[in-house]
Image (cartoon, rainbow, N blue to C red; front, side):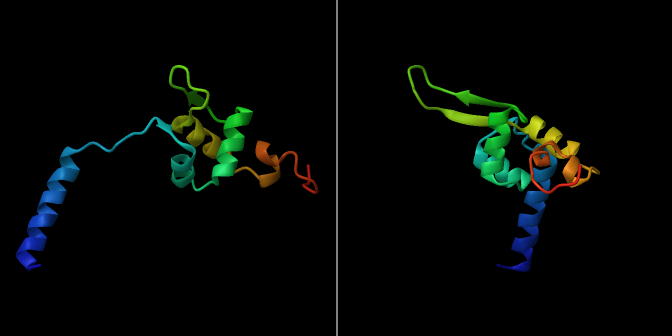
Length: 101
């Protein structure tokens, strides 16, 4: 690819970046929430089922199984609540044996 072509592509990408608003996802699957947060899908599932983060189960009419979605805002709030707190003080670590209280 020529230098001019590369510059043209960069210019187009720059224009697109300035014109397109970033996608703000409100609800995420376990996999996307895991990728987004860096937490394991198992931990995301535990947090959702225990009510520590907001989730909903989306079902089609008459279906017995659906798709559980995680509210991004609640995941952000959960993570931010742990900032600057010692690990033993975090709610998810309260039940661990051997932690100092």
